[in-house]
Amino acid sequence: MSKTRLATSFAALLLASGVQAADLDLNNMSDAERAAFGAQVRAYLLENPEVIMEAVQVLEERQAAEQAQGDVALIENNADAIFNDGYSWVGGNPEGDVTIVEFFDYRCGFCRRAHPEVTQLLELDGNIRYIAKEFPILGEGCSHVEPGAIAGLIRADRSKVGEGRGGHGMISLGVPVCWARDYH
Image (cartoon, rainbow, N blue to C red):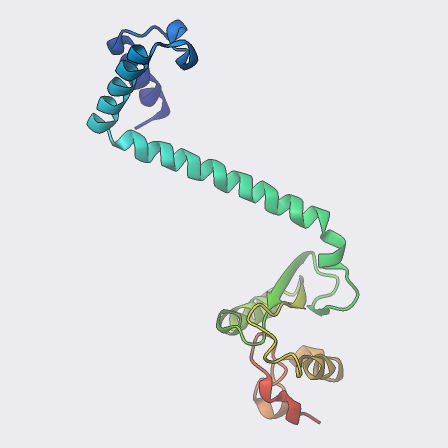
C-alpha cells in the first residue's frame, strides 16, 4: 500500500466517522466522541491490517536511517582514535585510499571466519589500508598472549602475517592464539 493510499484511506476514515479534520483534537473531544473515533480507527485497522505492517516498515526505515546517522557521527567524533591511535597494527597499503578497521577478539569465531575474506580483499586490492584493533568482547581468556601476538606481528615479515610459525596461523589476526605462549 502506498503512502498516498494510506493518506487517502485515513481521510476516508475521518469522513466516515463524522469527525471533521478541524475537529480532530483528541484533547478537546468528549469521552463519547473519543470512544466513537477509537471504534472507527479500530474497525478500519481490523479491516485493513496491512496498514499496520506498512507503518512498522516506515518506522523501521526511519530507525535504520537514524542509526546510520548516529554511526557516522560516532566515527566522525572518534576518527583520530579509530584511524590514527599510534598503536594499532596497520597492514595492507599504509597509504591506501580506502581504510578498513577490523575490531577483533582472539576468541571470536565470527572474527576467525571473516579473516580469510579480509585477507583475500587485501590481496585483491592493493590500495586498502588495514587497521587491526583488539576488542576482547568474549572475555580476557587469551589476554596473556596478546602481547606475544603483537610482538609476533612486529617481528614478522608483515607481508606474511597469517602464516605464523610453521604456517599454523599463530599470529594471524582473528585466529585464536591461546597457544602462542610457546612462541619464542
